[in-house]
Length: 276
Image (cartoon, rainbow, N blue to C red; front, side, top):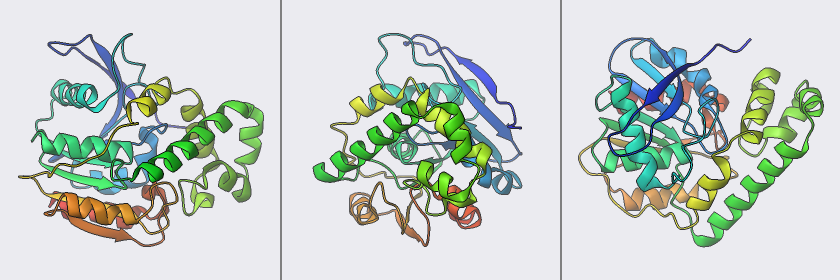
């Protein structure tokens, strides 16, 4: 049975209040983990215990994803809006300038947080925003297809598919290089998280014009890319390195777009190297 999450009510000075779900463990310098679009904080569970051996680890459900409710009506899901909300969430949770690790959308948010000097270090795993227009259209098309599939499949069919490795591959093979390693329970939960995410459509719409073109000076930055990423192709990592010359670019052999499950030990080592 999945571990329960906690909730925090965030009241920014200049924005309507909102709520985020989070999971917290360990002690030491804080590390905040941000998932990708359509996912949830449980994506980080394969690495949380490793990180929590030496650090306080807080995995967040981004607003409108996982157990976090949608933002109040009329609120935007663009970067300029969400980044200050995350900074406010850090303050409410009592963490000042945490180390931040993000995957995909979470990686883009982590880099934006680094650019505003709101964090101590950034580890971005296959971050969004370094695509060409054609690569963005391809990625968004794949994401829309995954979302439509999650909505179309009845829950009993999802549960049946998740019971075997081939079925798990059909549900999550786009984002994992080794989907068979994901548990049936985890695959069912993340398919439901995608299907029920009120933030999916507005976040995707807000990302149409997004390209990360700024340096991130003053904080350590690592950009890591799975060699088998089929959603955001690995060559985008080279562009990221050109955009952020001081960043360390790391290849994750045999990993897909969400590498935490494909090779938890490697991903944890990359994170801890950056934090250290």
